[in-house]
Amino acid sequence: MRNLVKVDDRVFVKGTGTYEMNKKYRSSCDRTVFLLGNWSEKRGWNFDSRYANRWEFDIDPDSEDLEGLHLRVVVYLEEPFVIKTGENQYEGFCIDLLNEMTKVLKFNYTIIEVQDGTYGIEDESGRWNGIIGALQRHEADLSLSAVTITYSRAEVVDFTLPFMHLGISILLARTSEETDKGSLWTFLEPLSLTVWISLLISYCIVSYSMHILAKFSPYEWYNLERIDERDFENIKNQKNQFTILNSFWFTMGSLMQQGSDVIPRAAATRLIAVVWWMFTQIIISSYTAQLAAFLTVERMSTPIESTQDLANQQKIRYGVLKSGSTMDFFRESKIPMYERMWSVMESSSPGVFVNSSREGIARVKSGGYAYMMESSMLEYYLERDCDLQSIGGLLDSKGYGIALPKGSPLRDILSRTVLQLQERTILEALKNKWWRDRREGPSCGPPPAEKTTNSKPQNIFGIFYVLLTGLIVAFLLACGEYCIESRHEAFRLKLTIVGKFIDWYRGNSNDTKVRSKMRNMQLDTAGQEIGIFNNKIE
Image (cartoon, rainbow, N blue to C red; front, side, top):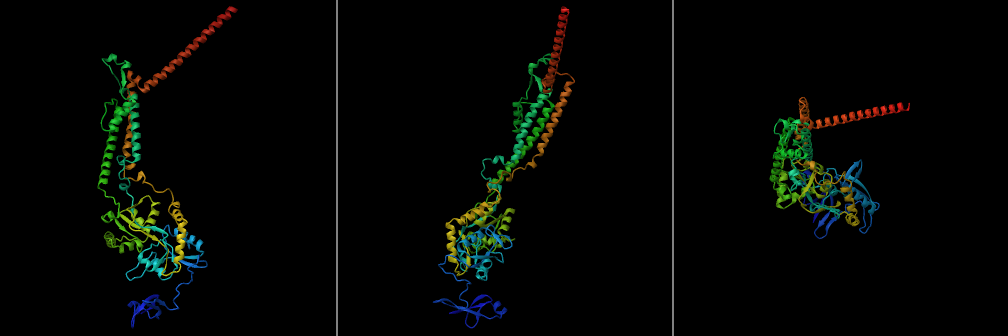
């Protein structure tokens, strides 16, 4: 038989002659050693009567509620499970679950934040920190947080039935190569939507400008059957080749770099053609270079789609939450791939372990880092941040449970309450409330088109300004051509838009003058007839 002793709130086994305790404890304290009890293989534990009841409350195993009890609840601040909104004010999934349990069991509670800010992990000396350590030392009666049920934790504390099931998943930043892989419209991706729309508008404007300037300039009219100079003024033989269809055909042929059978003759239309050719050359060159880069990157990139891909590469580093169950999973795993990943994480410099999930997500979004976290929290952040994605499946299967000190009489009644709330779908309603209903804005869908790595409008809009300048200069040049030709009173002026407008205006003016003269003549005739009639009467 061996005796148990307590030194500085720690329990030791008494050997023969001297206590088997750490030297630093034996040398650093001269306090009294208290005998707590005995243990034997036949009878098990036999505590001293002064220490036999370690609980401040007695609970009937068949009781239906905990009315009158005031429990201390230790929590770890982790969104959306426990969120601090003010002094001694908390909200979140676990707080709502705690309130639902108080409605059923009728107890009161006080929330205590864990001092060291960790869930709890065992160190090399066998001591636990975080929530698990606080429950071990009886500093709290229970913990309702995102505490994962693991074998090593279940050896030192008790857990209720799990109130949420989950597993370890991998969080990675969303990239264009992965989101747009295999698209049927890959050939459109080298240029942004803004550039494509601007290109279509430019095509229409240039085509119409060619048509209008050809009609405006007298040099675009030529004689089809001109034999000598005397036949030059036969208006039926005059033709302008830049009709609407021919203008669009000319600009399309230039854009496709295939040419056209329509050739500009006037200086204004030739200037537009030169500017348009330069414009199309720049656009086609940019498009070709961007398309080649897109296809090359897509062919050379090896996107990470599973844990195996992550473990077999060295470009992207990966890590876990410090002093958490995920860290414990990799550290204790006997699977060769996970052992290799743990060795890489341990030897990484700078360190890949983070102090909180928010810190891990920030490192993921900065690039070159994958964060392995529990799927429940990963799902929460994926609903709110479209720059994140989950890769692969779950690495394991486990659950969150209410943690209590070892041997706590509260375990059975709390487990029944969790099962009752689960059957009434209250747990599912609370998850929908905090994961989906309380998100700001719509749920994240496919990544927006603006986030793809295509040509930005500002990088290519300079050539559009050159095209606009060329159009303005061409219109001014067409006006100069008309003024020069008008000095010679050429017959072709009558074929231009301005010439036709002038003829129409003059025709209307002449018609007005003729009608006015006719009206005056009619009035004069009528006046003479009246005068003759009056003379006859006299």
